[in-house]
Length: 560
Image 1: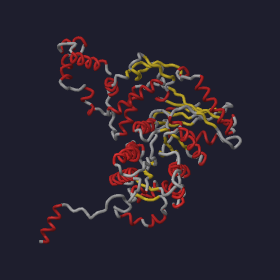
Image 2: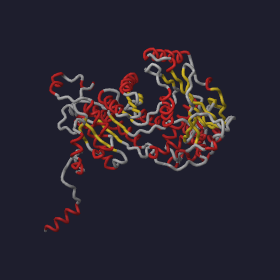
Image 3: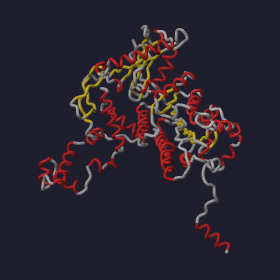
Image 4: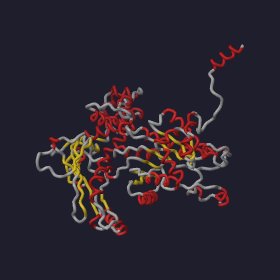
């Protein structure tokens, strides 16, 4: 808490407990203005709280920014004032706010958030701040050697890529934001990501690749290069002089892949640091690591999606799924990310991480489900099941949808967006014996997406609800065999391929509809004219046309 605010609260507490008899005495002892103390006791709010509605960022967003600053500080990378402004601007863009921040915004932000302070950052060599220890190094070397042996990778096929920075015109200490408990902060040298970055690549046997130099700007300028002695490197630009996902992809396609063909036709190994731009994951986020979700992920990989993100609670299971997917199509990058779909803060944090790394998702597939089962009686038990099912099948999915739709529009310009909801026939089956909570929650989310589709055109975001059909996944492994024998099962690849098609421009006429993943695509397209009916293939009650009271009375009058 702000020391001044703490003093005010202590003064109020001492007055209320009788330590002081008068406000004057309490104010004098705690060194706070008497008028402020009087106002607080009369119900006035602190200035920062009273004016929250006038702040550009919400309190939650400012808190996220504070946590990011402290995390960067803990890594010896305390952000400078311009970098904090840039991060705040990115968050504003998520709100649709494209207006520039005021000149004194950072100073006011620091004043509102006493956990951070503006202090002098002193340069220190990176090697002194990495926190390397025996356990970390041992674990890395064991993983490295195991990977090399298992895949039969030759040393000449092992490469290390890293980036360094040239802080043009900066050779002295600069002001940064860090924890307010410090008087000074150490900054890893070079503080590279704000100026000019150089990506370098060297093999284990000493071979070198062309460097990629990243200038800050929109276009390369001839005045940046001397007429003679310019190295034969590749040059590009970014908005801030840092590497980015698109530049990382450019480096892979133009430098690394063409120049590092494995000597024996096998594998090559690329060692990277942990910076997000080295693992770009721009396109897909899939909420599953097994069953139908895994099959859908594989279908997107086979469709040559640039990158696929799969999420789930268990890292080991995710990594196994990612390895399987990667083997099926090495051209796509598959990234496992741990996220509990029932924890709203984890979902929000995941999207914030994507934003910070300039990763923008344009296809969102929602597959996680709570399959709570049971009758509606007794109602007390049903209520518990329903709360659990609604949390997963409705509210958590809506948190993901909200984050997906709030991505900066300028970053997704020209890139179609799609939401694919893997639902269930239980959403419309009647009756649904012993599936009350599951069917109600599934129907609720599917209907919510239908309403959302009424407000969004397919050009803005294409939304499709899909029942995947009868697929033998882990969810049905405990079903009695006699029931399994009575069901006509579908191949899991059928709804998977259907989901890829449903996210395409060719399937725009499905916007806002509920379809089955085992339906024939060609037949659906032949019947496209039927989709002109706004109620066709939608969930809900279809009654008589609504007529307002005035019209009814007018018809009665005319009939009389």
